[in-house]
Image (tube, rainbow, N blue to C red; front, side):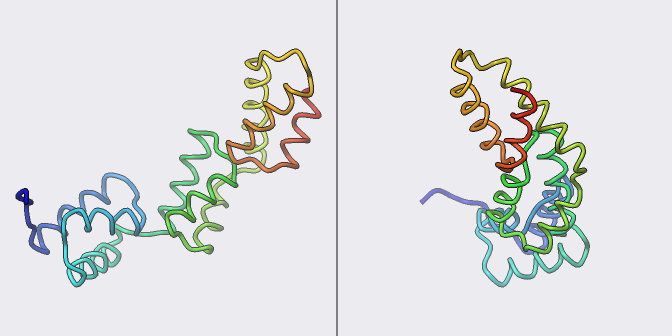
Amino acid sequence: MPYSKTYTVTEATRLLEKYCAYQERCHKEVEQKLHNLNMITEAKELIILHLMEHNFLNEERFSKAFVRGKFSIKKWGKIKIVNELKFKNISTYNIKSGLKEINENQYLQNLDMLASKKINLVKESNSYKKRVKVFNYLKSKGYENDIINNCLNKLL
């Protein structure tokens, strides 16, 4: 068996403080990191409690930062953002709180911009096939069917 470094609770706590200070983390990521450090359950609970008490770990703050980042940088739609947050075991309350970070006008502008770019990139002479390709692309980015249709009706 390969040698793996062991950590005291204090060492692991300091490591996790740095891990959380570097960027917002959710409980699932912190638990995975503790698992990778081979910490026992009691130590994991102590460390997570410490991180929450000292505001290194805050799921509402994480969900808001996650939503802002995925929306403004990756131009994701609400469906994809919600699914990713659910995958990270974020509560419904914190998901709703995070989604408030999205400006509705900016959301529609992002959709228009993505649709326009994709329309110009899709080399398809059949207008129906072109529409389907653009629709599927926008759907994969996490946008809702009705607003995609409204956008495409306006652009095509």
